[in-house]
Image (tube, rainbow, N blue to C red):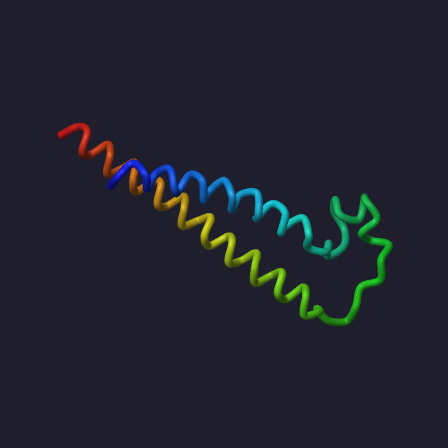
Length: 87
């Protein structure tokens, strides 16, 4: 595989890492733990999830899948490079 593939995967991995961190921080705390320490436990919880929260969940899962695919892609690229370098 060409070298540009590795650079593309690394850049995509960095972008998705930052995006995933931000998306996770946007989620509402479910009570207890660290989130309630910063005032998350004082807010009243609604009976259901809003459309915005469901979309946020979908985006988080989608970015997580892309993030995981980047890691697998980099691993496969490294494996192929190591095999090509030793033969």
